[in-house]
Amino acid sequence: MKNTVKLEQFVDLKEKDLQKIKGGEIRKTSNSLLNFFKRR
Image (tube, rainbow, N blue to C red; front, side, top):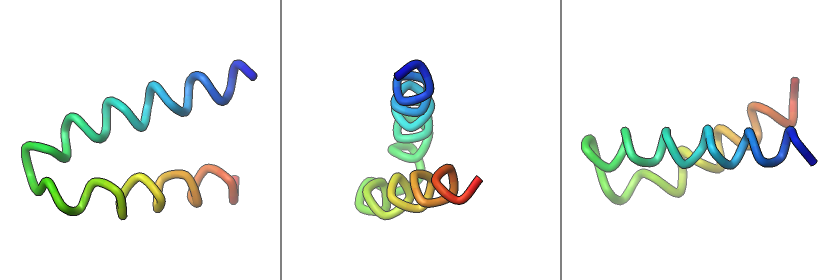
């Protein structure tokens, strides 16, 4: 469960960064991050 919490915190931080860049791309990037972590 700890990994899930860390992942959510990480994605949250990334989303805040991405909001500065492009609002509409956030969901796509979050999914990419989740897929990236699942592969590891």
